[in-house]
Image (cartoon, rainbow, N blue to C red; front, side):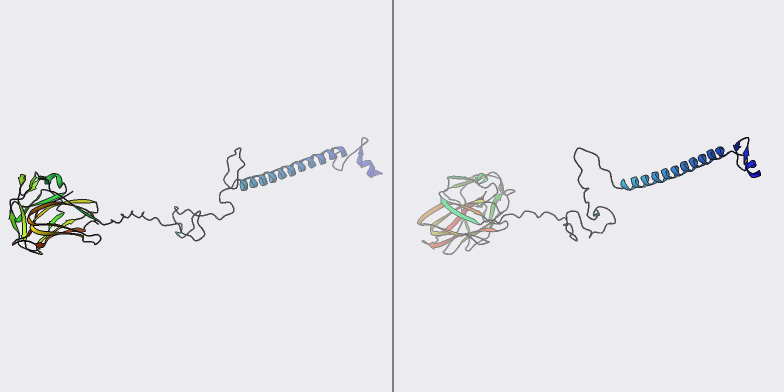
Length: 299
């Protein structure tokens, strides 16, 4: 009974510490609320940490711009990353995009220079009368040669010509003459600069004797005009190319007197090859049946 009297004061229950039970309950509820708030704050902090971590993981990959088209898989997705051959420190044997594994990219190489088409040898010849006056400057814009004006040992050539025409000699003794039926003129010669119309030339007597000429080819079609003649003989003109191929032979004959002709030779051969010309006495019909040359022109 005494204990009951100690726990009741003025008709209200009190705690051993002098507080009422209702006050103690309020304190307990306040403590529970604080504990719940602390736990809620801790849970919120944990949730925020988890969200932040997941967000960082999500944005580790490059972001794609949003558009009206649904983006497809990123280039190279599902394939191992390929190092760029342009980055320093990357092995030269590394594979390149678009190549099979361990396949090296093609090494750059210079484009092959286009080969020049092969030159098809061409050789034709025609014969015609010689004009009364031959202009060698007009007939031979590339090169020309005239014989006889300076004697048997020296010829007149085109000044600054190509030098493609060469006198290769021949059999028999050469002699000069000055009664040719046609005249020859030029305005660009050396050592004689010009001539208004000379009738000189060279001849050689006897069967098998004659003249040998050569004209150097340059791979392009060329035209040679040979002005030649004979006296009391049958002359034979043989043409061939130094590289082989077509050949041609023409004959001209006058057993009684003099005869001249313009032989037009058209040819084509590789650069450096030669057109070989032989004009010889095939048959002599007199004491000095002969063949002669006056000039040759190249265009």
